[in-house]
Image (cartoon, rainbow, N blue to C red; front, side, top):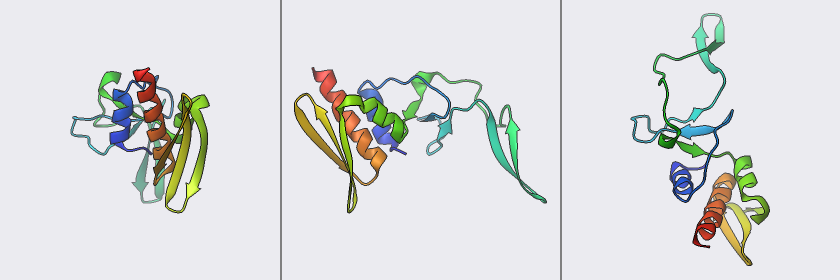
Amino acid sequence: MISFDLAQQLRETGLRWTPSEGDRFVLPDRDLDGRVFTISEMVVEVRRSPVGDLIAFNGTTEWALDAIEQAETVWLPREAQLRELLGGSLLSLARLDDGWRCTVRIGGELVEVEEAEADEAYGRALLAVLRATSRA
């Protein structure tokens, strides 16, 4: 999962999000730091019982928010979503001894981004693409 800092930079650079099933997001400035939420048609939780763990399907949870504006959330795109957003700019992702290198084409220039995690490399590469696009 990409870092909150990177997700926020992507948002500030103009990345738009149409929420869909399975998407993850955070709610900054709401005393929920570190909590990642997932969009789901159904809330599922694990309950402990004397006979073993139960997977419970619920409509709500005790602490649930009624609703929140999308503008108050920060989307945490998954690796596959980042690859899709890079589109034709993406040239490769290569394994390094200590991480990953993502290579993208921005205009006629090759840009390489190295990060410890593959999704973070994709995200930093997307940030470079978005920043170049916003300057053009």
